[in-house]
Length: 395
Image (cartoon, rainbow, N blue to C red; front, side):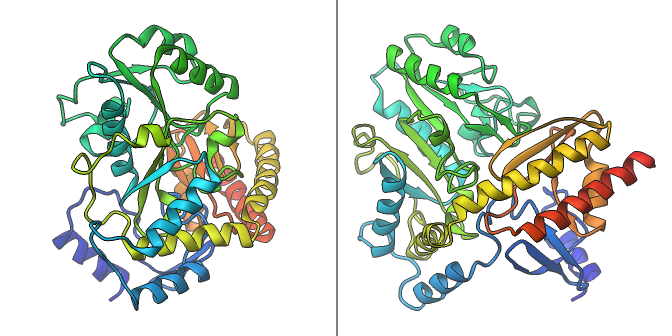
């Protein structure tokens, strides 16, 4: 089937809830993907940050092939080897917590919200989340997402949520009351415009939560698994959460989500309180183990830091050349370029030239290249971006 035939098939049979790009991707490897017409693209937003170690990483591909020949799925009334192994690997690289597996970031947030209410004294049920945050599309997650555009048409939202400004400790302090169970936030707001939480703010939140008997939940769905140059985003600040969510890069492209909680908090999820039929299946967990092994054995945390510096240097130079650039921000391989004009035209111009980037909040160019990206690919991508910005500004 050619591109037009595939698009017509989607038009007839697939619900049109996505604004799709007119491309049919048929193959991808590392930071490169190819469409049905044979065109090649550098992917600097791979799978909405899911392919954190690149598309079809050989270790992940081999792990999936091997596991698929042994055991794809078994229900969670049994033990399985890959699930326990992945839980141990995650716990040892984070804060020694216990892990519950599900299938996506939104499911992980739902599990975290339920655990926060279950693990705190009766009467505590309120959740404080941050304006501009994004936590998923299920009802609990969308209610925690303090962006009105995601609520339109779905009201009323779930009760018990309060919204405060990001990076404003005083607003959190004022919002906490005797019914507050938890504070939820992302170490870096991705969909909110690649805004980074100040280390002092996170430390202040940790102290405040401890003082008021409130749990601290960090949504690491996008920042986790090496994206920022450390295993998890919270590790830059030295602040340890009570509960942490994970997904996206965890499975190397395979659908998987998870929460990690301190053991004394995790104990609240006794049998019958929460479950996920597909959560922790052997196939997804084997992929997750391969992701962690690849990050360690290929020194991808170090590469993320080196390539981040290289990209940031390019972006700073680009900002000096183009008056449309207002601010450049980010951490590791999660970066945003805020413009003083809408950015979709630049995104489209990049795609036409063979580079995939994203625009969020209408004016922030967002990039999350894979941790396997090379210096050559970085230089090529930044040259395309610079050319696209120049072309749009001149039009």
